[in-house]
Image 1: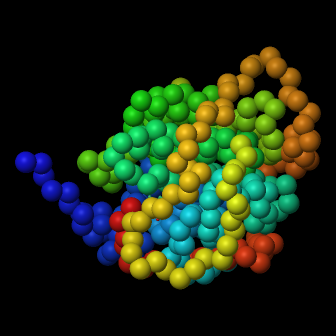
Image 2: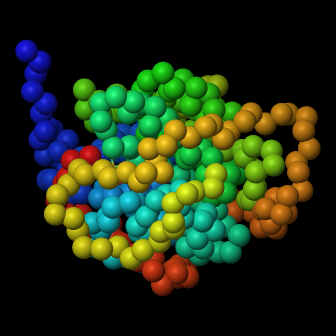
Length: 311
Ligand SMILES: C[S@@+](CC[C@H](N)C(=O)[O-])C[C@H]1O[C@@H](n2cnc3c(N)ncnc32)[C@H](O)[C@@H]1O
Protein backbone atom coordinates (compact mmCIF):
# COMPACT_ATOMS: atom_id res chain seq x y z
CA UNK A 1 0.00 0.00 0.00
CA UNK A 2 1.36 3.43 -0.87
CA UNK A 3 2.26 5.90 1.87
CA UNK A 4 -0.55 8.39 2.57
CA UNK A 5 0.28 11.92 1.42
CA UNK A 6 1.51 14.05 4.29
CA UNK A 7 -0.48 17.25 3.95
CA UNK A 8 0.97 19.09 6.89
CA UNK A 9 4.63 18.44 6.33
CA UNK A 10 7.70 20.23 7.64
CA UNK A 11 7.40 23.14 5.21
CA UNK A 12 3.71 23.57 5.88
CA UNK A 13 4.41 23.82 9.60
CA UNK A 14 7.38 26.10 9.00
CA UNK A 15 5.25 28.42 6.84
CA UNK A 16 2.65 28.61 9.58
CA UNK A 17 5.26 29.31 12.21
CA UNK A 18 7.06 31.94 10.15
CA UNK A 19 3.90 33.62 8.89
CA UNK A 20 4.01 32.75 5.19
CA UNK A 21 0.77 32.31 3.33
CA UNK A 22 1.81 29.00 1.76
CA UNK A 23 4.54 26.39 2.02
CA UNK A 24 5.58 27.33 -1.55
CA UNK A 25 7.45 30.23 0.04
CA UNK A 26 10.30 27.81 0.77
CA UNK A 27 10.57 26.71 -2.84
CA UNK A 28 11.28 30.28 -3.90
CA UNK A 29 13.61 30.76 -0.93
CA UNK A 30 15.60 27.68 -1.92
CA UNK A 31 15.72 28.67 -5.57
CA UNK A 32 16.87 32.11 -4.48
CA UNK A 33 19.53 30.67 -2.20
CA UNK A 34 20.95 28.65 -5.07
CA UNK A 35 20.54 30.97 -8.06
CA UNK A 36 19.86 34.46 -6.70
CA UNK A 37 17.00 34.91 -9.11
CA UNK A 38 15.84 38.10 -7.39
CA UNK A 39 17.91 41.10 -6.31
CA UNK A 40 17.39 44.08 -4.05
CA UNK A 41 15.63 46.86 -5.93
CA UNK A 42 14.20 44.53 -8.58
CA UNK A 43 10.86 45.06 -10.22
CA UNK A 44 9.27 41.61 -10.19
CA UNK A 45 6.26 40.21 -12.02
CA UNK A 46 4.70 37.25 -10.17
CA UNK A 47 2.42 35.16 -12.39
CA UNK A 48 -0.01 32.94 -10.48
CA UNK A 49 0.65 34.77 -7.22
CA UNK A 50 -2.23 33.64 -4.98
CA UNK A 51 -2.43 33.20 -2.08
CA UNK A 52 0.77 35.27 -1.99
CA UNK A 53 3.70 33.54 -0.33
CA UNK A 54 6.03 34.15 -3.30
CA UNK A 55 5.09 37.80 -3.15
CA UNK A 56 5.98 37.82 0.54
CA UNK A 57 9.39 36.29 -0.19
CA UNK A 58 9.98 38.48 -3.24
CA UNK A 59 8.97 41.56 -1.25
CA UNK A 60 11.54 40.72 1.42
CA UNK A 61 14.28 40.28 -1.18
CA UNK A 62 13.63 43.34 -3.34
CA UNK A 63 13.19 45.57 -0.29
CA UNK A 64 11.86 49.10 -0.15
CA UNK A 65 13.49 50.15 -3.39
CA UNK A 66 11.88 47.26 -5.30
CA UNK A 67 8.39 46.46 -6.47
CA UNK A 68 6.39 43.27 -6.89
CA UNK A 69 3.37 43.04 -9.20
CA UNK A 70 1.37 39.83 -8.86
CA UNK A 71 -1.53 38.46 -10.85
CA UNK A 72 -3.75 35.46 -10.31
CA UNK A 73 -7.14 34.15 -11.28
CA UNK A 74 -7.86 33.94 -7.57
CA UNK A 75 -7.73 36.74 -5.07
CA UNK A 76 -4.51 36.90 -3.11
CA UNK A 77 -4.48 37.22 0.65
CA UNK A 78 -2.05 40.02 1.26
CA UNK A 79 -2.57 43.13 3.32
CA UNK A 80 -1.99 46.34 1.36
CA UNK A 81 1.44 47.92 0.99
CA UNK A 82 2.88 50.41 -1.43
CA UNK A 83 5.58 48.03 -2.74
CA UNK A 84 3.32 45.17 -3.82
CA UNK A 85 0.51 45.39 -6.36
CA UNK A 86 -1.96 42.56 -6.83
CA UNK A 87 -4.19 42.07 -9.84
CA UNK A 88 -6.89 39.47 -10.18
CA UNK A 89 -7.41 37.88 -13.56
CA UNK A 90 -5.88 35.76 -16.27
CA UNK A 91 -2.18 36.49 -16.63
CA UNK A 92 -2.56 36.17 -20.40
CA UNK A 93 -5.73 38.21 -20.63
CA UNK A 94 -4.21 41.42 -19.32
CA UNK A 95 -2.52 43.59 -21.95
CA UNK A 96 1.21 43.62 -21.09
CA UNK A 97 1.07 47.42 -21.23
CA UNK A 98 -1.28 47.34 -18.25
CA UNK A 99 1.26 45.34 -16.26
CA UNK A 100 4.06 47.70 -17.27
CA UNK A 101 1.93 50.70 -16.39
CA UNK A 102 2.28 49.70 -12.73
CA UNK A 103 6.03 50.31 -12.85
CA UNK A 104 7.22 53.64 -11.49
CA UNK A 105 8.86 54.74 -14.73
CA UNK A 106 7.47 54.97 -18.24
CA UNK A 107 9.08 52.62 -20.76
CA UNK A 108 10.48 50.45 -17.97
CA UNK A 109 10.26 46.69 -17.77
CA UNK A 110 10.43 44.05 -15.08
CA UNK A 111 13.87 42.79 -14.05
CA UNK A 112 12.48 39.38 -13.15
CA UNK A 113 9.43 37.25 -13.91
CA UNK A 114 8.49 34.48 -11.49
CA UNK A 115 5.74 32.03 -12.33
CA UNK A 116 4.38 29.40 -9.99
CA UNK A 117 1.33 28.99 -12.21
CA UNK A 118 -0.16 25.54 -12.37
CA UNK A 119 -3.08 24.13 -14.31
CA UNK A 120 -5.94 22.48 -12.53
CA UNK A 121 -4.54 19.00 -11.95
CA UNK A 122 -6.72 16.13 -13.13
CA UNK A 123 -4.15 13.36 -13.29
CA UNK A 124 -3.98 12.98 -17.04
CA UNK A 125 -2.28 15.53 -19.28
CA UNK A 126 -1.32 17.80 -16.38
CA UNK A 127 2.26 17.95 -17.65
CA UNK A 128 1.07 19.00 -21.11
CA UNK A 129 -1.14 21.73 -19.70
CA UNK A 130 1.72 22.89 -17.51
CA UNK A 131 4.00 23.00 -20.57
CA UNK A 132 1.36 25.05 -22.39
CA UNK A 133 1.23 27.53 -19.55
CA UNK A 134 5.03 27.78 -19.59
CA UNK A 135 5.07 28.42 -23.32
CA UNK A 136 2.60 31.19 -22.82
CA UNK A 137 4.85 32.65 -20.15
CA UNK A 138 7.79 32.48 -22.57
CA UNK A 139 5.61 34.16 -25.17
CA UNK A 140 4.84 36.97 -22.75
CA UNK A 141 8.46 37.69 -21.83
CA UNK A 142 9.43 39.84 -24.82
CA UNK A 143 6.64 42.24 -23.87
CA UNK A 144 7.39 42.54 -20.17
CA UNK A 145 10.94 41.45 -19.28
CA UNK A 146 13.97 43.73 -19.60
CA UNK A 147 16.98 42.61 -21.56
CA UNK A 148 19.28 40.69 -19.24
CA UNK A 149 16.29 39.88 -17.02
CA UNK A 150 15.66 36.70 -15.05
CA UNK A 151 12.96 34.01 -15.06
CA UNK A 152 11.82 31.43 -12.52
CA UNK A 153 9.01 29.25 -13.81
CA UNK A 154 7.31 26.12 -12.54
CA UNK A 155 6.72 23.26 -14.91
CA UNK A 156 5.47 19.71 -14.39
CA UNK A 157 8.00 17.20 -15.63
CA UNK A 158 6.79 15.19 -18.61
CA UNK A 159 7.33 14.64 -22.31
CA UNK A 160 7.37 18.37 -23.10
CA UNK A 161 9.66 19.42 -20.28
CA UNK A 162 12.96 19.07 -22.23
CA UNK A 163 11.45 20.94 -25.17
CA UNK A 164 10.22 23.82 -23.03
CA UNK A 165 13.62 23.94 -21.32
CA UNK A 166 15.27 24.22 -24.73
CA UNK A 167 12.85 26.92 -25.82
CA UNK A 168 13.72 28.86 -22.67
CA UNK A 169 17.42 28.28 -23.36
CA UNK A 170 17.08 29.99 -26.70
CA UNK A 171 15.95 33.14 -24.90
CA UNK A 172 18.44 33.28 -22.03
CA UNK A 173 22.17 33.21 -21.54
CA UNK A 174 21.89 30.77 -18.63
CA UNK A 175 19.03 28.36 -18.12
CA UNK A 176 18.61 25.31 -15.91
CA UNK A 177 16.02 23.02 -14.44
CA UNK A 178 16.00 22.82 -10.65
CA UNK A 179 13.98 20.95 -8.07
CA UNK A 180 14.04 22.55 -4.65
CA UNK A 181 13.96 20.40 -1.55
CA UNK A 182 10.64 21.98 -0.52
CA UNK A 183 8.92 20.39 -3.53
CA UNK A 184 6.83 17.49 -2.32
CA UNK A 185 8.29 14.07 -2.99
CA UNK A 186 5.27 12.95 -4.98
CA UNK A 187 5.17 16.12 -7.08
CA UNK A 188 6.41 16.20 -10.66
CA UNK A 189 7.16 19.87 -10.51
CA UNK A 190 10.45 21.36 -11.60
CA UNK A 191 11.51 24.97 -11.89
CA UNK A 192 13.15 26.50 -14.90
CA UNK A 193 15.55 29.18 -13.70
CA UNK A 194 17.11 31.46 -16.27
CA UNK A 195 19.16 34.61 -16.48
CA UNK A 196 20.31 36.95 -19.24
CA UNK A 197 17.12 37.39 -21.22
CA UNK A 198 17.44 38.33 -24.88
CA UNK A 199 14.20 38.79 -26.75
CA UNK A 200 13.72 36.84 -29.97
CA UNK A 201 14.24 38.99 -33.05
CA UNK A 202 11.17 40.87 -34.08
CA UNK A 203 9.62 40.82 -30.63
CA UNK A 204 9.14 44.08 -28.81
CA UNK A 205 12.40 44.92 -27.09
CA UNK A 206 13.06 47.48 -24.49
CA UNK A 207 15.77 48.05 -21.96
CA UNK A 208 19.54 47.68 -21.98
CA UNK A 209 21.43 44.57 -22.91
CA UNK A 210 24.26 44.77 -20.43
CA UNK A 211 26.12 41.51 -19.87
CA UNK A 212 24.31 39.63 -17.12
CA UNK A 213 26.31 38.98 -13.99
CA UNK A 214 26.85 35.29 -13.39
CA UNK A 215 24.92 34.63 -10.24
CA UNK A 216 26.07 32.28 -7.53
CA UNK A 217 25.05 28.70 -8.21
CA UNK A 218 24.83 28.95 -11.97
CA UNK A 219 28.07 27.17 -12.71
CA UNK A 220 29.31 27.54 -16.25
CA UNK A 221 27.45 27.27 -19.46
CA UNK A 222 24.94 27.76 -18.68
CA UNK A 223 -1.69 35.14 -29.13
CA UNK A 224 -4.06 36.89 -28.61
CA UNK A 225 -6.20 35.87 -25.72
CA UNK A 226 -9.74 34.76 -26.15
CA UNK A 227 -10.43 35.60 -22.56
CA UNK A 228 -11.63 38.99 -21.54
CA UNK A 229 -9.31 41.10 -19.50
CA UNK A 230 -9.23 41.09 -16.28
CA UNK A 231 -7.70 43.58 -13.97
CA UNK A 232 -10.01 43.65 -11.04
CA UNK A 233 -9.73 44.71 -7.45
CA UNK A 234 -8.61 42.05 -5.07
CA UNK A 235 -11.55 40.54 -3.27
CA UNK A 236 -11.97 39.08 0.18
CA UNK A 237 -9.83 36.08 1.07
CA UNK A 238 -11.32 32.82 -0.19
CA UNK A 239 -12.66 30.45 2.40
CA UNK A 240 -10.52 27.50 1.37
CA UNK A 241 -6.94 27.22 0.24
CA UNK A 242 -5.40 25.29 -2.57
CA UNK A 243 -8.21 25.62 -5.12
CA UNK A 244 -6.82 26.23 -8.54
CA UNK A 245 -9.60 27.15 -10.90
CA UNK A 246 -8.02 27.57 -14.27
CA UNK A 247 -9.59 29.55 -17.02
CA UNK A 248 -10.76 27.82 -20.15
CA UNK A 249 -7.94 29.57 -21.86
CA UNK A 250 -5.19 27.89 -19.90
CA UNK A 251 -6.60 24.45 -20.58
CA UNK A 252 -6.10 24.90 -24.29
CA UNK A 253 -2.87 23.52 -25.65
CA UNK A 254 -0.80 26.44 -26.79
CA UNK A 255 1.79 26.12 -29.49
CA UNK A 256 5.34 27.21 -28.81
CA UNK A 257 5.68 30.86 -29.57
CA UNK A 258 9.43 30.99 -29.17
CA UNK A 259 11.84 30.57 -31.97
CA UNK A 260 15.60 30.70 -31.66
CA UNK A 261 17.02 34.03 -32.71
CA UNK A 262 19.06 33.72 -35.93
CA UNK A 263 22.44 35.24 -35.15
CA UNK A 264 22.85 37.10 -38.42
CA UNK A 265 19.35 38.41 -38.77
CA UNK A 266 18.87 42.16 -38.45
CA UNK A 267 16.43 43.43 -35.90
CA UNK A 268 13.14 44.45 -37.43
CA UNK A 269 12.47 48.11 -36.70
CA UNK A 270 9.08 47.36 -35.20
CA UNK A 271 7.10 49.97 -33.38
CA UNK A 272 7.74 48.17 -30.13
CA UNK A 273 11.44 47.91 -30.91
CA UNK A 274 11.81 51.60 -31.52
CA UNK A 275 10.03 52.28 -28.28
CA UNK A 276 12.41 49.95 -26.45
CA UNK A 277 15.46 51.80 -27.57
CA UNK A 278 14.29 54.99 -26.08
CA UNK A 279 14.94 54.18 -22.50
CA UNK A 280 16.96 51.34 -21.06
CA UNK A 281 15.42 49.71 -18.02
CA UNK A 282 17.34 46.68 -16.83
CA UNK A 283 20.31 48.48 -15.36
CA UNK A 284 18.07 51.12 -13.99
CA UNK A 285 17.16 50.72 -10.39
CA UNK A 286 13.70 51.71 -9.30
CA UNK A 287 13.32 55.34 -8.39
CA UNK A 288 13.18 56.15 -4.72
CA UNK A 289 9.71 57.63 -4.99
CA UNK A 290 6.84 55.30 -4.41
CA UNK A 291 5.06 53.98 -7.49
CA UNK A 292 1.56 55.08 -8.08
CA UNK A 293 -0.53 52.57 -10.01
CA UNK A 294 -2.25 54.26 -12.85
CA UNK A 295 -5.20 51.95 -12.81
CA UNK A 296 -7.71 52.57 -10.16
CA UNK A 297 -8.67 48.91 -10.26
CA UNK A 298 -5.21 47.65 -9.29
CA UNK A 299 -4.87 47.31 -5.62
CA UNK A 300 -1.71 46.97 -3.63
CA UNK A 301 -1.27 44.06 -1.28
CA UNK A 302 1.32 43.74 1.43
CA UNK A 303 4.05 41.37 2.29
CA UNK A 304 2.49 40.97 5.69
CA UNK A 305 2.59 37.36 6.77
CA UNK A 306 -0.43 35.41 7.83
CA UNK A 307 -1.35 31.75 8.06
CA UNK A 308 -0.03 29.12 5.70
CA UNK A 309 -2.02 27.42 3.00
CA UNK A 310 -0.99 24.55 0.87
CA UNK A 311 0.00 25.07 -2.76
C1 LIG B 1 0.66 26.98 -6.83
S1 LIG B 1 -0.42 28.32 -6.92
C2 LIG B 1 0.66 29.70 -6.66
C3 LIG B 1 1.13 29.86 -5.27
C4 LIG B 1 1.86 31.16 -5.04
N1 LIG B 1 3.12 31.17 -5.78
C5 LIG B 1 2.17 31.40 -3.60
O1 LIG B 1 3.30 31.20 -3.21
O2 LIG B 1 1.26 31.79 -2.86
C6 LIG B 1 -0.74 28.41 -8.64
C7 LIG B 1 -1.64 29.57 -9.00
O3 LIG B 1 -1.63 29.73 -10.42
C8 LIG B 1 -2.85 30.38 -10.74
N2 LIG B 1 -3.08 30.36 -12.18
C9 LIG B 1 -3.18 29.32 -13.02
N3 LIG B 1 -3.40 29.73 -14.28
C10 LIG B 1 -3.42 31.08 -14.24
C11 LIG B 1 -3.59 32.10 -15.22
N4 LIG B 1 -3.81 31.81 -16.51
N5 LIG B 1 -3.54 33.38 -14.83
C12 LIG B 1 -3.33 33.70 -13.54
N6 LIG B 1 -3.16 32.78 -12.57
C13 LIG B 1 -3.20 31.50 -12.91
C14 LIG B 1 -3.88 29.60 -9.91
O4 LIG B 1 -5.05 30.35 -9.73
C15 LIG B 1 -3.10 29.37 -8.62
O5 LIG B 1 -3.45 30.30 -7.62
